[in-house]
Amino acid sequence: MAVDKKSNNNICDIWGSEPIFSFTVDVDWASEDAIKYCHSILEQHKIRPTYFLTHPSKFLYSLLEGGSINAGIHPNFISGSSHGNSYTEVINYCMHLLPNAECFRSHRYYDVNDITDAFYGLGLRYDSNLCTRFQKVNPFIHRSGLIRFPVYFEDGAYLLHEKSLNFNSVEKKLFSSAGLMVINIHPMHMVLNSPNFSYAQKVKNLLSSKEWNSLTYEDFKKLKYAGLGIRDFLINLFKFVNKNNYKIYTLKELYEIIKIHNYLE
Image (cartoon, rainbow, N blue to C red; front, top):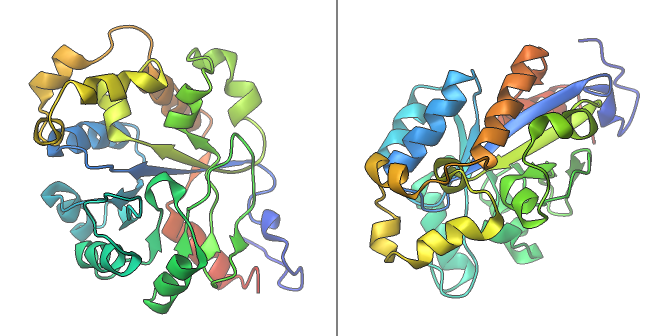
């Protein structure tokens, strides 16, 4: 790809002529079966995602070792977090999950300077810790030095704002124009086929934390929504991207593109 290195801060040169996608997954303490189910759908549609880990997962560790996924950490800095009671404790816990992590996205996008400065000091170099509502915001350098990749579409936010789950009615408006689109998916919304934002929460409220964190394939069959839901929407998105041969990158690949071509310097 020909790149004019004299074009300072013109990051849109990289993907300004077509839609570009990066699929990411916030694990959010999903069970192993939920993670496997979610990944099977991504794999079926030839999507290599970036996972953000909240807890140990033998399945994801095996995929990471085999090079079939990109991964970062998903720290929870909210009060009462199982990751710890201070920024330092949470950061240490998550770095133990993935000692060579290069990126993060906080649970609920929690963000303060102390956190980003600490992560940069530990060797992380990029994040995706900002969520928009269908806004193509180009990657930028955060004050910490991290390269930030804003989220374009999040399944939970889409459900929260009660947007149409009929993919055909929104594909042109939301996914056909040029620009980078970072997509954020949650395994539990996927396996439950949530039709609205509260559906997964209602299911969770019926279960103990232990039960929620150990849901099986058989449980999903009983608990999933049978009508049109967010899983159906996402599968149609995957098919749409593949049908149109749009480029798909992991966040690491996008970071390397920026780094190699000296953008944002």
